[in-house]
Length: 484
Image (cartoon, rainbow, N blue to C red; front, side, top):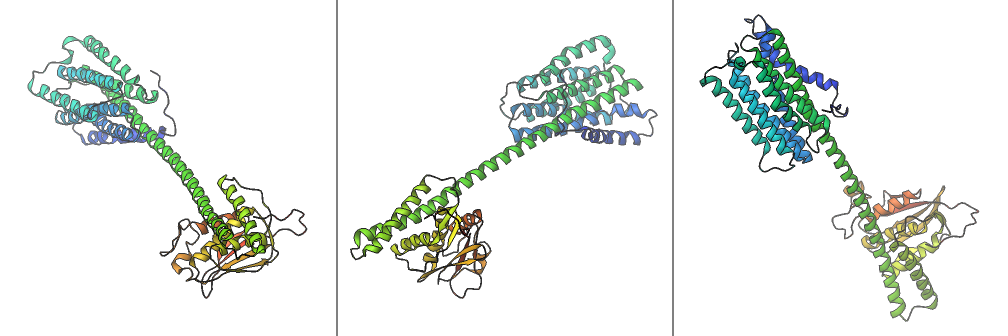
């Protein structure tokens, strides 16, 4: 039997010490109250079922809950074995309390029922190795324990009292070894169960049997040594069985928490990926709308002058290039010097092609950022202004310290006070909004990623005014301005 240590993350010596105190408390309390008995150790040993019973009940609950968490079939059969021991111990504790003088303590019938108990536990262990079950094994184990417990009570009550020493101690030892050793081996060799679990369960059952055997050979006149051996064996068996079950439960909980954390991370990854895809689709739809409107004007409106036609054609070409980069799922371009006049000019043309009026004057300002990110931020702000404004959208550009601010204003109903606090959160939108509530979140994320900012200007009399700030391009930068 390989008796490995329980991993410290599941159990330690302090837990075992606490378990020992809990196991000893009921039996020591009753022993202390038995003032009419001169040898308190003998009294304690005669009530040993009070140690086995609660420990086995606790082990049953731990194995059962661990099985419910992990769904490992071997654990439900270990719970069935514990249940069989628990029900017998509970019934036997009642018998011991009634027979405090232990007149039936050395009855041969108790020995025979212990032998039968070992045989049935061995049968449950064989069932555990099959990794499948029909019905409820815990109920089956409890039923087995109930039958054995009631059988014990009926045997010592109605059958003639036959001493366990009638045939001598050697046959008892041989009979016990004949059944106990195979039963323990079956328990310790359970598949898919850590060896530190199966070894402790097997050792616990073995120690319970040793405690019974010593008590039976002592008979009605219990000795101090025999009582000490019985009590120590039962205590050790209780600690081993309960420690193994509690550690298994702890292991199942830790594994469940780890799986839940991994699942949460996976869900977060999928959600982030979905957000990225939705953000890309959001910008693609807006870009396509501008390109389609401009292409329709170029094709159907013969009154467009040659200069404006050239501007529209350049805008369509620039927006198609940005659309291609969006479809190719870029991982992020290198920041460059962006000419805001060219970028805003193309976006204004796209808005006007869709029938939206925008007032704007070139400023000659340049910023340092990813060109497509600048275009996406400003396009989102222009789209929002067009959706919620009643007439013109105003765009102004000004330099502030080391930044360039692009101010986009509309004359719509403005932002409701209750919405302002959550305005830039994903999915935040007003009750009458027709959008998805993701554009402003995307825009603020893009500006922050480039060392800029996006905020709602407070105190506007009418409509809503958004201020997008980007790092100003350094003077004397030789890099040519990029058209987004």
